[in-house]
Image 1: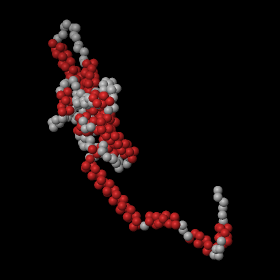
Image 2 (image 1 turned 30 degrees about the vertical axis):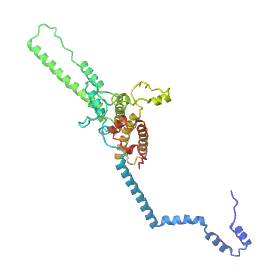
Image 3 (image 1 turned 90 degrees about the vertical axis):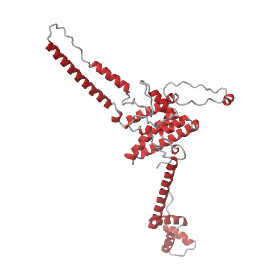
Image 4 (image 1 turned 45 degrees about the vertical axis):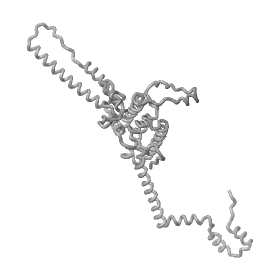
Length: 342
């Protein structure tokens, strides 16, 4: 702790150096002389109290904000929306998790191959051209529900009664036949009611947003996974002979997949697009003051941008890249330049 110095001792020291003023006058002079480095602080304090300076600051801030909005609108018009892109039937189906029906104007060769596979009665293709819904809630499929319904109908079927009495009047036979038909009609009505109730329980329309997101992720895997697209899209060109001569140990044989493709860039981009749409709809409707989810949306958009830049660099505008951006409605604003979300 520094030593305590009294005022009168300092005055005596000043008087010893030739100061002839009285003590009271010397105190006033000491505290009246303001150092130069503290003058700017005093001016800043006065400026904060000046209404004219405050009005100028507010005007500059409003001009900067309006200029940012103009630049953002120009970028959106030139490159597209960095969050939503262009609306497509496949992206719109994320709201209900039900695949859209094919449109007559779709003449893409990639989708034509899918439609040819859809002609088979036992196979329903995934993706935007699927005509039947194979996804249900609680990890059930339509085939499992159908088989369970048939099994329950067989178990609840009435056992045929065999009359071992030889002596039976015609009136008794007619009465028993009418009762049997009436019971059979009631049983069919109860079974139809139970089947309808089961379909409503497992329907995604009655599920939560988390259930629909889970199904949308599975749809993205079935649509953009390479275990499906390799059957429809042309393969990559083989490795050039010059590269093989430079690197003879290069392995050109592909390893067979052990299961469905869930880690390729196309699948990751589609899954991120589904999550981005769900989060953007929430923030637009109910989560406007939610700061944490706004940050999460920014993280997802930038992560998708990195995947898009990598895939664009690897595919070089090939059919796999075109199929991805056309189905998901992605524009240049989703991967080009700096994305800033406010």
